[in-house]
Image (tube, rainbow, N blue to C red; front, top):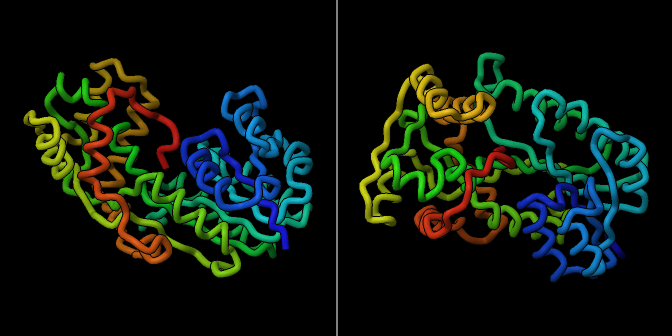
Length: 307
């Protein structure tokens, strides 16, 4: 029986990785992508490859209802706006239910502290609301709780040229550990689930990297890779904010960095579930290998897809 799969977030880095893997494993007629702008270069490429490109926006119910027709399985990438996320996500779930979508796979996040005092309070609340909305919709679901992407490391420390200039990693993460996961590993494991969704019906999976690491250890690994001493400094939150302001970093970027650094210090991301290894059938890419890869690329800091 045909299973028409719709991938949201199709022009983002995780969505595009997943599509590249999936299109080699299923009939192209069973794959569709959701984009906001049909003129986007990736959207044009998908159309050229014969993938059905559907136009939709989480903020536009009518566009979602048009796009979700004849879809069986929805790979639902969470939106990036913490304040509006729950509202926009309800649009997605309501439209999915109205169109008879049979299975939703939702990309959520991991956390430990669900209190209002958590640095991740907005993130946690919006994801919790979405998870509950999906569970009460009656649609079969799989909740995919992602730890921080390994790609966030570069966003937090800067690229190779910045490190060579400053010779330090300056973040208020204290001795907190994080189970970072490369997006490539997440794309691979979630393709496995999309190919056999019934085995993961109404389950919540926690996807963590195989290693727990601190930024002090990251500094040591990078020092070995680039053969330059990189010092790790953990300031207070106020010191961090003052220094970043002096360096001219925009306030919203400082807030993102401070929020996730504090959460790391509080061990929000020190999770050790082996769901990812179990479904993937192997350990995740080693962080030494990942850091070696990004150290060879002088890319700009990435400030999207941070959670």
